[in-house]
Image (cartoon, rainbow over all chains, first blue to last red):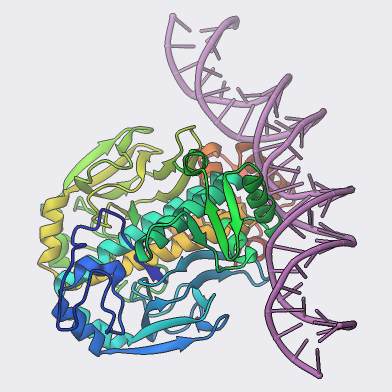
Length: 250
Length: 250
DNA sequence: CGGCAGCATTGATCCAGATCATTGCCGCCC
DNA sequence: GGGCGGCAATGATCTGGATCAATGCTGCCG
């Protein structure tokens, strides 16, 4: 499962740092690992060590990283592309519990089985750690475990926000909250932009928000008709962010 | 927030254990703490130490333990009664994210602010730890932190199940899953019984399942009419558990 | 180039569950 | 006892979003 939403401005250690490669707060261009989400947790020497035990790997679009209930052999760090995490019912109904963006970790809960399934939405690059290696690494860094636990708490808090969204918000509110959230997350990895890429299908968005494709489509179209957004190839441009926030936030 | 659903049969250390008080797997009758949910995490001597830094406290029904966003000064262990944990929207819509039963911990994520609000449903007994004391205790037990992190992972998994329920299940499925879940949890603290106490109001159940009171009421009534359950004072008796499982499980 | 498969959009209709309204059932206090 | 306030149950009606059904828009492949 995904742990650790990239932190917003509340990331205390998000400062420029160096290592032999010249790591920045976003990880290091030369390393396989992109430690965006735990940027503040690691010293640069630790990043090097973590890098040493990782294996870069490419996953084509729509293929599976791991399945719910399978033995959790690996921890992943997404370096490129988007991954969907989901649970499903025997009759095919599906709930996407989250999308993992570059910098996010999968399997950080370190449970012995994966709690959700993970599939590449786009072609994805990850770097993979053997769970055993990662565990023994963590065991040697007690304060890192503290940090991981904090992340788990943050992740749990996001899950609870999503429960509120799924249980009590209208279709329009769900869409608005989703777009603002994606914008904020992309802002952390690309430069801030009013354009929000949406590489996932309408079905994915629907399964994330507890709606149908038709409702997603209609709601987005209506918001575009009302000049709140503009539909562009591969995404959406947020025209009236104030209005969106009024709809979607708190 | 609540951490640590009482584990089911997958709780590896759930064996009879003794201490100077004669602790059992459910904690100890003489101690203030009821360490039900982390039963396997602690040696009995540790239970004693934890007990020493705790303060028992009574909370009347419907009063607040803590509010979402407030500084998380304490960690609580529920020893008696039921607590509801929830998030709410400014317009009053509310999502209950969980019910804490005796043995459950609140605030175990050890974040510096509470992620949800907590209110006593019934009169409640808790034992309270100062977060600082609890933290320094945890710092001295590295394997305990591991255990806490595992619990956080389990909690996250439950939250994801709840997302699937809120986003993709019908009213009837929600009710069935809720009743079976409550039964399983009560079975851990009382003797296994077909009768499930429901001390919380219909509004609470509705806000937990993303429904209205009327839908909860009608669905329960219908299941009773179909002889799947029997409505008894303060709860419900599960008559046809097979049928309920067919409706409510996976 | 045409055909076709896989989306997204759009329209027409339906229905599960929400909303509104009433009634009944306690428990409590005067 | 009688009045009242806070549920829960139930009935009548409404509606947001689901379902069913075309239609269009790519991009790909022969």
